[in-house]
Length: 153
Image (cartoon, rainbow, N blue to C red; front, side, top):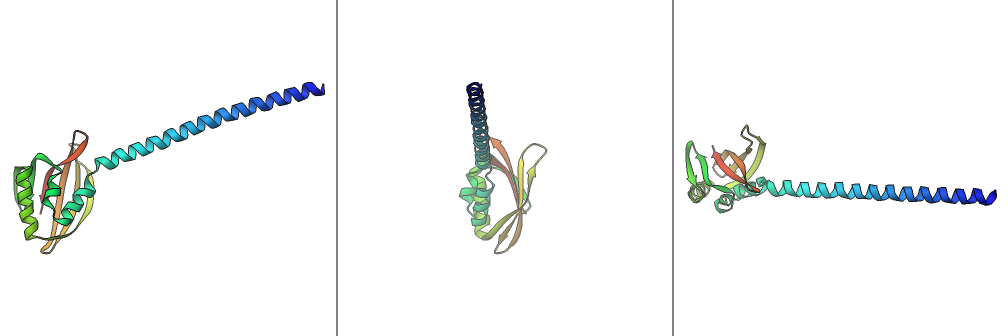
């Protein structure tokens, strides 16, 4: 009877260990799957948001860097005058503006999504001649965001 009891006890322990190992393996699998999903989703979001690069270009007054985010045709409003321009034309207009109003800082104050599902950012551009309110709208084009409209008032 003693041997039988020992054998049953040992068998139960083996089954418990096997069961625990399977659970542990499953938990590890789920944990790594969740971590992988979080890493890839945060990378995708970070790659899609061009706001930091656009903000930096505005702060430096770098029209060429800013234009690299433009759609081929862009709506530009500058000091109450608005029009639709090619990316190259808009770059020249902004370069002239930045040469007359040397930027010192740019800070995003508001951000969101429009009714047309475009992303927008509103901020203050501090220049040597004063503060301008800047609004830019971004639209998804392929796998990246591009600026479709800028207003500097």
